[in-house]
Amino acid sequence: MTTQPDIDALIRKTRQYEFVDGLRDLQMAAIMALLGAFAWFSLTLAGMHWYVQLILYLKDTFGSWARWINGLVYLLILFAVLGGSLWIMRVVRRKWLWRESGWVKPVRWQVPRRITVLSAVIMLGGVVLGLILLSTGKVDKSFVLRMLWTATGWGFGYTLIGMGREIGLRRYIWLGANGGLASTILLFLPLTFGQTAIVLNGAWALALGISGVIVLHRASTAIRQANHG
Amino acid sequence: MADEYKQITNFDRLIHEPSRLAIMAVLSACESADFTFLLNATGLSKGNLSAHLSKLRDAGYVNITKGFKGNYPHTTCALTKDGRRAFDAYRKQYLALAQHLKK
Image (cartoon, rainbow over all chains, first blue to last red):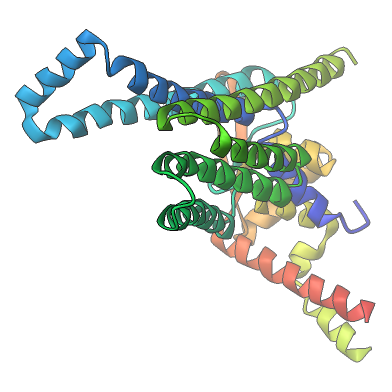
């Protein structure tokens, strides 16, 4: 090597490596699907006899701690899915996707702090806007509850846009912008709080899942072609 | 012009060498990378990469961990704190000079 290398291109390519096989998209899709499933469970199970029995048993046994224990189960499932998906990603990459191209341990925080902070501000801003509209009497309480999820959609969309710009991946910018805008539609649908959660998380899971499958397909085709010369 | 010469002579010569600069740039963008990834990313030969990594390790810029993945030897490289600091300083200097020359 005699000429100076393009430092920015090397840095960008290394940072993109974590995302060019689509597994991160699929992982995010799995988590979104799980959050949607939690909302669905909360809506449907609440009326089921065995679930009511379980909650009553927990309340009798643990008293006021029962609510926390119930929440802890959700949290444990979430961590199990997160840990499980990371393990699957590691195995798939080691045995297949990264076998020839090498292994990289990415930086822990791919999204810069300013983007995370702004995303939180967007979420809070949405909620505050809902509350202001409620106080002026222009909207009802259900609007504010739906606004919670819409603002979450805006915040997540902004995080994806920021990540896409930071790493130089246009699909995240596209997904973030369209997902964020689509979240706004939820405000005008006649849905309850729980139904809105299912629709929002389900839609994000679907979009990220499709994106992940397309990118994974491209990556596997490239690997097959490379292996066959 | 003298100012620019002064800036160029102030560059960290160890990092300024193109192959080592490429290695440092790749490692700066991740926590660690293995030998195979560095080979593919920099386009260097195995011998060249090995020699440059040794120089960077001797300077305290890179940590090299040798182990096994299954039955195969596996070498992982990561920037040390000093290495990261030196690369950041180099990059700042380089960008400042580039801006200065543009003017």
